[in-house]
Each structure stands twice: as C-alpha cells, then as structure tokens.
Image (cartoon, rainbow, N blue to C red; front, side):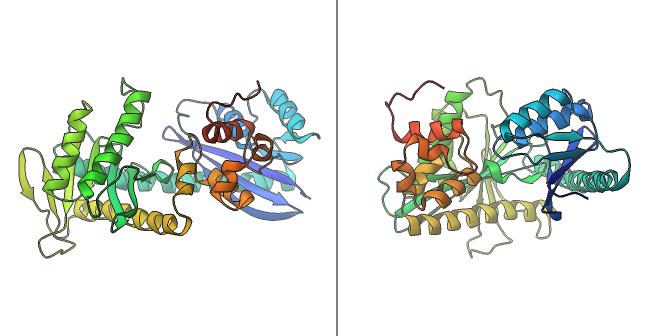
Length: 369
C-alpha cells in the first residue's frame, strides 16, 4: 500500500488542461488540489506533466514516489533532478494495474470532472462578457476587466485597490493594493484615484511599452460618477492611454443599489434594466472591489503600513508574504532579516529571498549566485 506519495493526473479538453494532485502522507489521503496550467494548447500530456512537476516541486520537497497517468517528457532526467533536490531517491511511476493504477485513474477522473465544470462556468462567463461588450460598445469580448475602489477613514491609512475579472471569473492573483503615499487631504477621492492609476499604469507602461502582455485591461470600471471619471480620464490621457475604455459606476441619487448610473465618454449617463444579468455582474465587480478595499484597510489599520511595503516587493504573492509573516511575526522583522534568515523560510526559494533582501537593502552588493 501507499505510504508517502503524490498522485498527479492530467486531463486535456478544448485546448485547456487540468492537473489534479492527491497527497498521500503516512498512508492517508491528505486531500487534493486542482491546477490549470496556462498556455498548454496543443501540448502532449507528457509535456504538460513535465512542466508542471518541475514548477510544482520548485519550492517544496518531493515525496519518494510520484504516480502519474502519463509518462512525462525526459522522465529519467526529471526523476534525477527531484532525487538531487530531495537528497534521496524519487521515483516517477505510471502504474498499469493494481491499487496504484486505481488511485491514478481516480485522480484522472477528478481532473476531467474539474475541467468540465470549469469549461461550463467559462461558457456562462463568456456569454456575460459578450453582453458587457454590447452594453459598452466594446469592439470585442473583454478578456480583462479592472475595477478600482478607494478606502480610508478621514484620510488615514488610505488605500486604493484594483480587482480583476475575466473569462475564468475573479483573478485573485492579479488583485493589487496601493497604500497611498502622497499627502492626500481627508476625503480627496480624486487625488487617491489619480495616484492609484498613475502607479498602476505608469509601471505597466514602463515594463511593457508595446502593450503586448496580458496585463492590459479591455475595460476599466471606476467606483464613482462623472467627477471620478474625469479625474481618471485626465490621468490616462497624461499617460497616452486615452484609448482604454473607462466607465464610472455610481449609485443613484437615493444611493439605491440596483439602480446604478453608468458614466462613459460621449454618452449621456444611463441605467440598465433592473434584472439585467449584466447589471448584476457589474455590481458584483464593484462589490468585490469594495470588499477588498475594506479588508485591506482593516488589515492596514491593525498592522499599520509596514506590511504594505511587502506588497511592493516584486514577485511576492499572497502565499509568500504569508510565509514570511508567519516565520518572522511582523513586516519590520522581515525588513531587518539577513539573507540567510530569509533563505531559511519554508516556501521561500533562493531567488525570492534575494529579491526581498535587495528590496529592503538597496545598494547592498549581494554575493554572486
């Protein structure tokens, strides 16, 4: 019977892939997770698995056995690399019969069902996005919609946030928080919006002047009416991004959710029919931005602003930030940590440790790799 193993199965359909991983520890099933690797269209199952395995064990030790439903590309080389990393033998097996075969088939069935659910949801989401394109006269169905909101209490601990949605629903890994740095007068929402958009789009423009990457939105929703919209428009014009569609979403005069007014260039403010699915969808985007702004603000008040400095470190996502805070207890301890201390944190690889250290100690020469 199985004692320590990961069971990894891939299923492909409609140009997409789902990889299902089951974790067996101490002979018990410790749960499973679904992963949806990007850009796998046209790839063979062995290619998808090889790329997934290399990335999956980049920051965690592999178990002695990895059971698969397809042989990965360069399997011998991959097993050798994993064995070196684990400092003991790691086997990659594609079982053909018996108990091991059964558990792999179970994982493969899970992968297929998870991918079918995702494709069905995407079809529903696709219809909604096509309807959004119609409402706002977009040339094609949007793949990325960004929604912005601000949160502050009398100007203290002011934050701006961005939430992102697309064909797969909310894209939480792309959410961003911006701790407002300039001296903003209490309640100056226009000033906050201006700083957030300048930082968000100024940085992306510097990194990708040709606008080739997928980090550019097809539609930007601003929580607010005509004033917010014109403040946002001025920033975008300043950056030479006047072609990105901006829409303000404002509650009615009676602050009545459900009767929002939409503001956009070249069109009188308008409302959508009360039970329109597009209206519900846009309200959900606005509510999600609001929820994210409030929780960010609460967290910021309790931790003050130091942790927001961790948000600014390139390449540090929520999981790594959590790992650092769990290990050191507070952001200021992370800031004070030496390179070796950072490298010792579970879930932080060498490159990330160097990036964190370099961010807090600019100008310090790091040793060669």
